[in-house]
Image 1 (cartoon, rainbow, N blue to C red):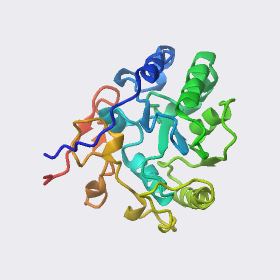
Image 2 (tube, rainbow, N blue to C red; image 1 turned 30 degrees about the horizontal axis):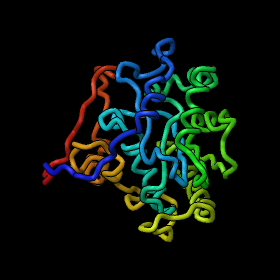
Image 3 (cartoon, rainbow, N blue to C red; image 1 turned 45 degrees about the vertical axis):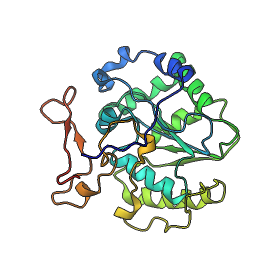
Image 4 (tube, rainbow, N blue to C red; image 1 turned 180 degrees about the vertical axis):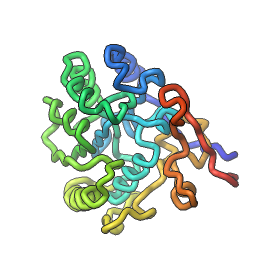
Length: 262
């Protein structure tokens, strides 16, 4: 098995201290996959990001990586970033640090405004963004609620779009197409990026995905992690390598390695 030498070394000590001070989710544990713990970020934490993306909550693949937006939804977001020519100048976080049970979303949303959680989250957003920030994208309702509560948000465009796992593909593709067009006018591509790739069409294509780069992941993960194209193009289709089995949704994860890896 190949292990890449390019990896994310993690947050600074100062930022790690803030992350470790995450307010307790215990009073709301019935709303989340609580026992697996929190997942905080992916991307640049040094205030160099030109784009901040806020999503909803981490999933089972994120739990394996200890990084957010690395599964099927994350690879869709990486494709979105790729269309903007961004290869590294981004930072990704979530409205909730714990994985949210989908059926509990409506009950969980008011938690975003609870003083301790609001102060911690807004301080995090302030700490990871700086003068180079050019835009913010909020994916989905929880992310949009969190962005609306960020009272010190820099004076940059805020785009509200559907979450990458939205089941309304037509609405998602239309909104993401418009967002890419708008952001190409305000977000500077990275030197090794290309923002002239085709925009979204009428259906989600494999070319609209992009692998999560090793520089976003901790050391020691297999080289294929963050690239589920084998599962997406196989039959039966498997969008994620990690899943929660129906027999034990709260405490068990199944991790499927794709076959014939070098």
